Length: 376
Image (tube, rainbow, N blue to C red; front, side, top):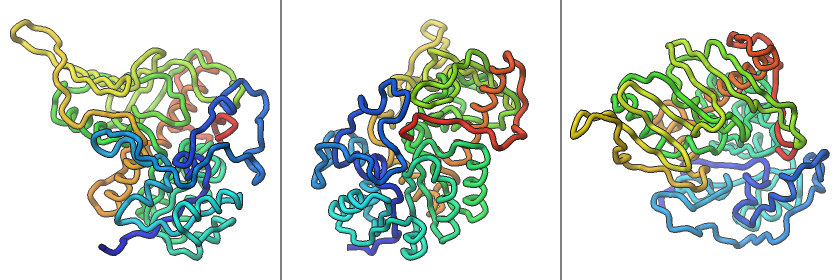
């Protein structure tokens, strides 16, 4: 057996850290209209779900490619032949015990900083509550970690996002900002098609309202920097705690590209002078203008790979390793792109609050922040 190349650890052994591969989450207990949290996310006494099986297998689907495999960061790292999952950290001793039994690991820590200081890790996945992720990213880089996976949402504030992105950039450490659809190889294929001229020069992008904890795949297709935004129709803070932008708006970029944020839009639509590409309902579709047999816009076969729904942690790790090994310049869902989307969203909120006035970017006040559903 070939020697392992990378030592890896997980900080935060909750759902994305580990539990998704041990059992099924009861969303009714967290997604209902709770005015107050039903448990304290900061407490080590928060409940463990019923029905966890430390020996449960997660290879439940026969999808092509890698879909249907690991859901959690722990399982994705453990499954990777060149990665040695060696350590885990969580405040809850019950979760540490489950992690140790599941993966045969004895290096279990209540203190994440102690784990970073002692384990000489190459890769760390940070799946804590949102508020800990910025400081832990900086600590991981300072400890010599060479690649960082962070769960979504990556950060609350612009200052937190700035610190994460800067720490990683200065050390040359790739940062993946969450497990989202954009990590799938079909998104890279879409971007390559645009670059190859499959739909002609791009005229605009369109995207759905940017909700779901920084799941904003449109930012992957930007070719310039957002310069100003206009927003309208935002909603007040929801009962679960989220202040994410829920209106509609425009994003004007330095290269002339305009992004339309529209209710009812597909997740991504890229419109060009001679066609368009649409990502909606977990599927990419390509349309091109043709002259024969009758002039018009015709749907064309999508060149492989096509998107298939599945767990994205495997593809996040693919991107991270490709960057660490010099095969990719930047993860598709990089921390930098997540930070751009966060700033745009905060600008849209400010514009909507000011009656739709144009708001210039970058925002001067880096303390500006969003809140997310209480359980994040």
